[in-house]
Image (cartoon, rainbow over all chains, first blue to last red; front, side, top):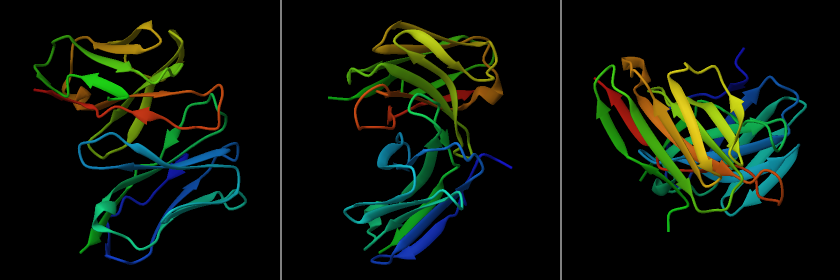
Length: 111
Length: 115
């Protein structure tokens, strides 16, 4: 089993819909959880960062971590065509430990 | 003002050649990284340097050699390039020791094509 599993998609949803992106992981030591967004031919950029379990909201984005299920989610409300990108989950066990990335989910928001 | 800059953006070269990719960050971060993203978009760490010291060295062929002349620069030299080295190479930096911020700042990538 890979350390971090993420459905590669593509996921196509109409503009304005709520998008749900998910990752599962196997390493119970992971404590830091991130979501990165990567536009085509660009580097990944950090969207959200969560420590341990719980929810975090930032504008239209909400990150959820359920450590008991080893499951993390990113919700995008009122999705826009500009949200079309690849979303990568990432996690690490400690602040100075390497970050492990999921393979990314390609998201298309249809106008 | 670009935070993490890589050069070149594109590199096309023949098998067997030696090439270098340069990376510079102006964020004052202590730690820098090289990641490889393959054709399936999987992002995998290669190396990590903290204040010029190598701290992560994943299972990477020894044809790949990182060099950090100072904490703002991390270069990647690749000897005897092979077809399988074709990928996008990302440099990143982070400040892991202090502060609430976490996560990496990535450069825009170097697309290497070996022919």
